[in-house]
Length: 185
Image (cartoon, rainbow, N blue to C red):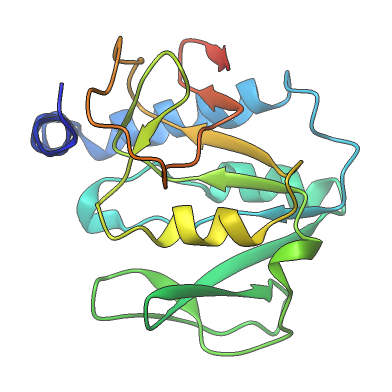
């Protein structure tokens, strides 16, 4: 399928999910994350969900990270890029014009410091190619990270066989966690 078709298809699928479904699936994804070989790192980047788009509730994963005393980094949109801040008890969040919760300000963290990135997505394929909302924020951000940064997609759904219109600018995932399984690419 083409990216445009995948975006439409998975947006419709998400709309059919109840808040209870999303919560249950999100908890399953967080618990399954414990099976990954990623827990020896220190700096973890995580997105905060856009509830209006029925994204995965990353609060369960956030609880795991904080319980393991990891440095949690959250993004803020600035122009066409993401900038990154350490999440602390003093971090103030506000929702931007696209309904994305993000930090107002805080302790800035360079992309090169981040070791694991939990990546939002709408769809992905069996090769680790992902489809987001089409603005390229995460592809640009991942190019700024170290080459060995671990990229973990989080999805409510299983993989597509292939995404037909993958671009040379698209960054592949290393893993994708769903409520049912972990994909390794």
